[in-house]
Image (cartoon, rainbow, N blue to C red; front, side, top):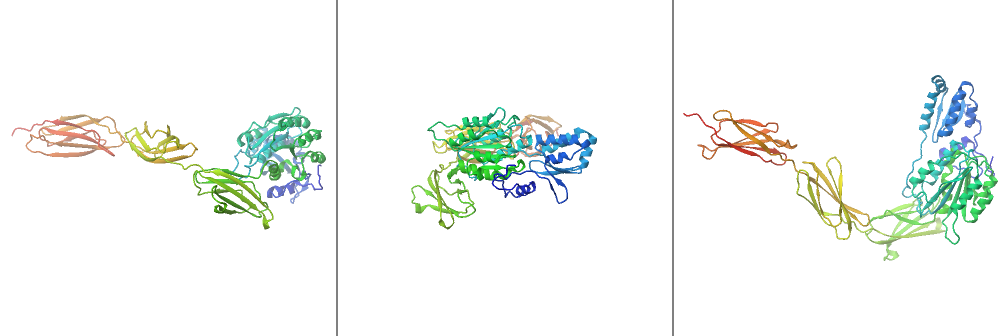
Length: 601
């Protein structure tokens, strides 16, 4: 079915080998049809229907449910013998043995459903990712219209594979105006535009829309869908049109009379490519696609669509991408260069020359790169300087060379704040000041601060004319990391960081009282306004009055938990002081004078 061009059908075992090595792909007419064979162990290997066909009796309902589940969750049954079935998902294969199904019959259908849900949960989902650096697709610009067969002849299982295939195929391209625009038309009884060329400007939104595309399950009205495609791809006369590609993805069942609408598209300059996953009429598809047929027409089994992704992507790239040298990630001292591969088969070399525009070509710096390079980084560049770059691809023996060129200007030098000072330090505030950057270069300053080693980071944004800020609502006795960033009009930032510490809460001594305990003894007690976190203890000092017979001074250190003490052998008119001691300083103390009397001799 559908074998053309003299190529032979490939069995599932051959395709498995191709999948494992990713070295082979299916060209036009090389349709992968599941065929019944004998494995080395004598087990009959067949398509999913073969496995289902061997089920009889009480197991029939269980396998009917499994069959239904394989369509909705992307699970396929590959083979069966004596109650054993090989089951495969999108990316792996495993075996369910007879005892499992015996157990299921005993436990009931609910357990089987639970097993199937677990199997379905293992089906991996594609994730949208941005184009990787150096992918070589920066020079692609054009419109790609996806004509997707969403009719009832396509199983849920097959439709899911088609969506994942399109997702992986388009992932490397930059999406949006000026790059690659993508539209999707679904073939159905009443074909519809799922999204047009202006719907998506990023890979993330495109990938999400592709993988969420619902299947319509109607009739295959391809001719009507092509009329919708004509409207989307139409360009006014005299207006320069970007490269346009129509990619037709179908199971090949009853495509209808498509020759006329496709001929109109091709006459308007639209390139037509096709992928068929079923038994198709080779003549119909070979007339539809744009030559060369061997690069633009593919017949492939849904299970092995990934084998053709690389070749099909290269075919699309040839139609919508140009050879160019692209500059990205510019800084004041570096630039990243990307280009599409020009050299093939690992032969030849690239010669890269770059230098300031006013230099002569002899003063340019030169680099020699291997043929597998698609990017390189230029470093040690001068800020705010224009550079010219020339990339020459030399083929072996000097038979041919291709030259690409580009120019760019490095960003201005980034200036950072300097001479940072911290003043007006208190328990809950700090003032930070810095020497301003040259006028006109900075749009704004951003001050970020947070406690060390951990804690919430806050920020304050200031105008470019300010050079000081008071940071408030800070924690006492805490180290803070403070970063001042100068944000330039170019988008670059220059930053400097300092460490500063808030002061302790130095609570004062309050309610100092002296209570006589005898002729020459006094009890001293006190309170503090609050128990500061850094309180270490108290110094109690006392000295006799100036009219005493003898002058003396004494002191005693008490731990932080002590709020009283008894002093003995005091002289009359003794002055007593209590001072709190903190980690970094002494707090405010309090003093009192006591009058004691000794007994008459």
